[in-house]
Length: 114
Image 1: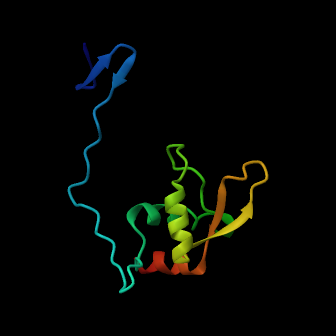
Image 2: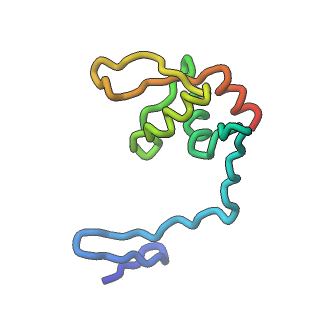
Image 3: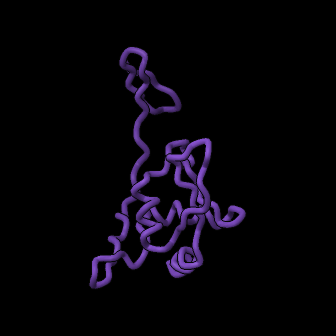
């Protein structure tokens, strides 16, 4: 069964309404560059998007969740910490497994350079 709203077709399967995907941008994301030891010289798009959100927050606090409500990947967080772009800020006693971080001066610099 298919429904039509605003000229777009949507597939309906049982109780699930499947919406068409938004078109992806034509230009692929630039590949990260690495130094001679394999360390990235600049953040990936995902890392940069996360780090940028700290620019508008008091103390450079970085979000725990994406704008869509999903938890930020621990891999992204730990990678940014290893690069020196973010640092752990404090332990969360209510959720000890959550890594609360803030943007570092190096993180601000790398964002300004890109």
